Image (cartoon, rainbow, N blue to C red):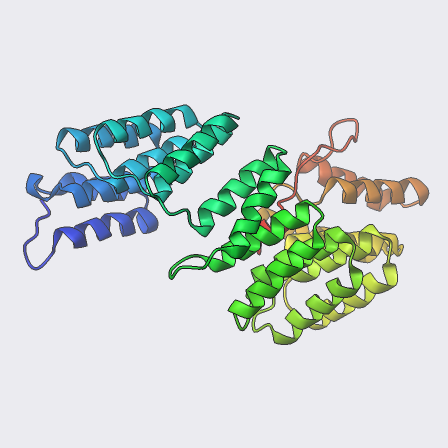
Length: 383
């Protein structure tokens, strides 16, 4: 059995459980934990295994070990938060609420993470009055709401269609003094994303200027959020300006950003602009991601270049198979190919295309496009 001999502390064992789960899988972590002496099965090692179950969304095993921990009086805010997050992740918000009530009954300290899980759970149940109740509870308990909580509330109210409340919390975010350790990038991006969704370009610009005043060099993801906002607003001048600013200063090229520009041009049939961007991307000789290949195929079809369109289709299909992505090509792209073959006498390529699409279940037996959603631009795969 594993023991704490030879300088292996209980904390080291907990770390090893977490690492084994990441590198060798949950079974390896379980085997290591089970081999520990009884004296080494403490709050730390139990907590590490519980955290693994939560990350793997293994509810039954997580609940089993959580009960064992309670029986051994290994209770803590962290362990309860892990269980709360597991319930929320597997779509059981009502269990989050009941476990929160248990925390109150047992006088387990409640932190901001706990409150945010409770807020999200009531929001998932569409109980906005209860969300308001949590806010009041936090205030009465002298809990300082942080930027994450304000951003969380703004997002919830926006999704519920209560835009005045969403704006209220966004404005509070703008006025709140930041604290050390807060994720300011995420706070600024939340403001940019929500103001963009509400078509408030001035709000987007304020968030962008605040971000740039705080960070000397915004990262690529921050530039991406700004580009998405400008694209949505139709502000082409500033869209190109911000893209050029990023391109001139970027140390690592990220295809998600030119993809925003390419989609903007293609959606407006700005073929000359799209072609110029395409040529600059090809000159970089960097392997494009799936979304880029999809746009390259669309551009080729719009220009009547079936050879290059088929080439990018083949490249994307190879990459899709290697990365286990199921959405490529998009439904729009498939329809463009089908329209091309309807208008042009090219039976060999048409047959080859239809066969390939049926093989990946993107066309049914009647050659009707099977819908498949591509990932959002900010969550674009980078394979």
